[in-house]
Length: 387
Image 1 (cartoon, rainbow, N blue to C red):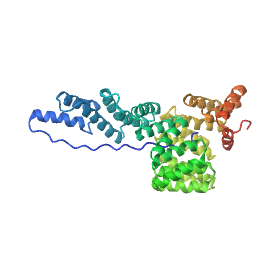
Image 2: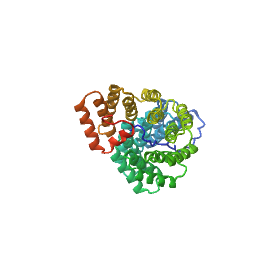
Image 3: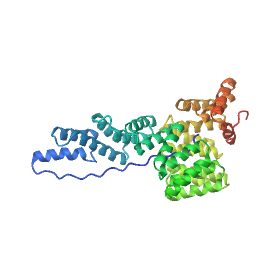
């Protein structure tokens, strides 16, 4: 559902480069200019980069493998400066020379992932894993993309394999915990989060997702402790403030809840995932549903087909009695995740409220067959088939 905690890939480190001394004469200077431009990390345009690398190759200064490495370094620099599209354009240059390079597939996948183009990212990670199945980073990339695409079986298998290879991989522990939490297997999820925190006590995200799992168990006090720890380490994440706000509502701390919601709104500007988290948590806190919907609308203005945000807005539509709009949102979300029990159940409730009994029964029966607990989840939201 829309409130699931998400693990996001961190930035890549870029390999260091040694600068080259320029030669004395004009020919040597031009040769070295081409060489250094090929490796230069602050070239403004991929076109300039390829011009330098091509000239260096023609002059015999660089071989093809070195030029590929130069493109990787240039792409990595753009990635680390936040220029994901520039990074992709530069990685594409490397792939024109070496279409089978697993490293380039992986780093391009990271840039696509950060742009939330998860299907294209998955294709790159799949190719990287196929060419080098023993590389754990490639496996983790695929796991993360599968998770974001709701392929929880595939993500669970990849995270578990990463842990089998390296029991000290705290990031894989968090990833597997997230899959288990989505499936509401909170006991096993928390066990993974506990181990991740033991291995890396300064991981703000691990405390956050453990707090989400504890809230799923209705352990509001310990969830609050985890949210507080997460914010103490990194106070800049909108979703954590929104989750803590909803937790404060559960504990009767209305003023603290509103302060956190306002901070989340400040932090979430322009951030689709943060806006969806606000939408979701405001809705489930029983707060102003119009306020919640506005954040979902803003999120979808950035990412129009995001499954989780469509799910969140569909839920709000059910709560507001806007059943046709809710059904439309669930329909759109199901195009990207056809076997999602929550989406099917929500669409079934909308169909029932619209008097479409046969369609409602088909969706609800299918949802319950996939997840026998889904009716209880919706009942916790205050939404039951006959409500």
